[in-house]
Image (cartoon, rainbow, N blue to C red; front, side, top):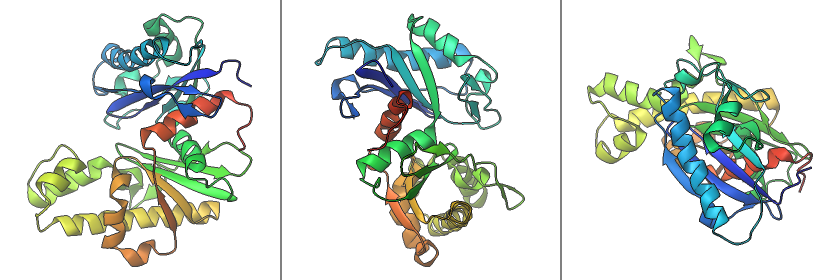
Length: 295
């Protein structure tokens, strides 16, 4: 069980960090403590830790100046994988993010950066943290089983059973089309495929949808992605014997468009869009200090 009534928690993605202080009385975020900062995840380790520190320090500072008052002795962090969550060591490489952190003991570096040597830091897979937070927010905890997927700079997957915490399913590198699923389900697939087919280079999916919304290739791009996604849903559903999914991440925001592009393929599944975005992962990250979390 946790000893503190308040926990500092963060969701670290490929391009950002979002942090806040969570009250364990009702597992809610204290609004004044929310902080978001961009992360140059392709840069050196020092730059990355500085970006993380900026957000975390802001949350701590705002907490000291807000109500209610309390002490922070724990930090829960939702991180993408591959990552050793028990030891706090990153093994991400060749994914376009955090290569410079490979093999580094992140726990000690964070304690030094925040100047809080007594701070207890635990890590959780970002997809598992996301699913944990969304289940209770959307009141899906009355069901027996729910699966979660995060779609963005990487592919995250998690499973949840009633009475248990969400667990990382780690399906990002499952074989698919001569490669792995992640190669076909991330932002990189959208940008590289769009450039290959049109000759137009875009920085991300948002730019494609906003600046190229009238391009004749866009419907085909969305339809092809929807086929990859439904292939993954079928694979995940068969593995876990569950057809109920919560989908988040930046690509998860366009689920209605993807369903419209291929309604029949999505029909076997119950899909729930994220309601909290990064906040779900923050709440989920804060719960890792609880021995049980069955509400």
